[in-house]
Length: 291
Image (tube, rainbow, N blue to C red; front, side, top):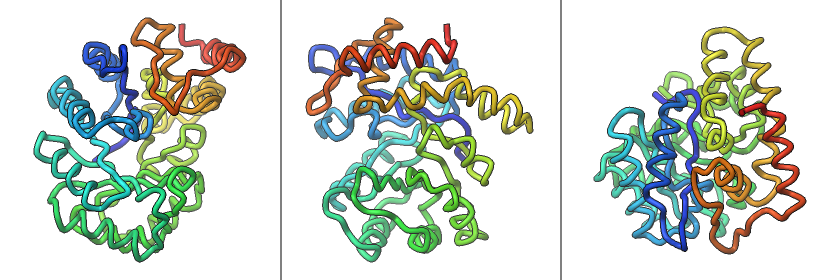
């Protein structure tokens, strides 16, 4: 269902407001670059600091501009189950192809709570849901056994896993055998390894900056050309690291600004990379040979 390079889109701002024109242009660039789907309002889209109205606006704009050319997986998670259901309902109403639902953050639910959270969403809204496990941000970890139980629900179609534990790809596959369950990496540096373990693609930060090259890596893998896929990954590896050399999406927005694609503006408490970090980002960009 979902595969290949899927950018976790930044949300461009201008003077504190969403820059709709820049966002539309970024979407066109992603589609032209071969991205196979788009994710608005994920972590990279600064969803934590979007108002509810802005969140809905970004999802709706992405769907409108995309116009069915590639699928849209709308970020729709919250640490409140009721609020997550509302966001998933909105995603369905406006025509998203799936909802990406993060594990509840800050609350630190146990596995029973995590399962109950996703079951409530499954029962409330009939649309494809992709689980999103990112323990480093949520302070809770959706364990493989819980993933296996959730995969049996009719609306749960896959997982974006940012645990960076590649062995989970095989374990998830074993626990979801017989289910149509797609596994997507949430970690750019290990995305190729994730694919080799059986994953289908990557929801990527780096693809904001290098959509065509990220897509080419997955295309090479799909064609069985591992040598080319590995070469592209070596070309990108320093850029992957640079995307998190300062709190994301600061580095991505810094580079996109240098490309004249949007302002570098981020929202507090995220701040722009400092001068030293910008120099390192520039070096990583040069090493990727994108110009």
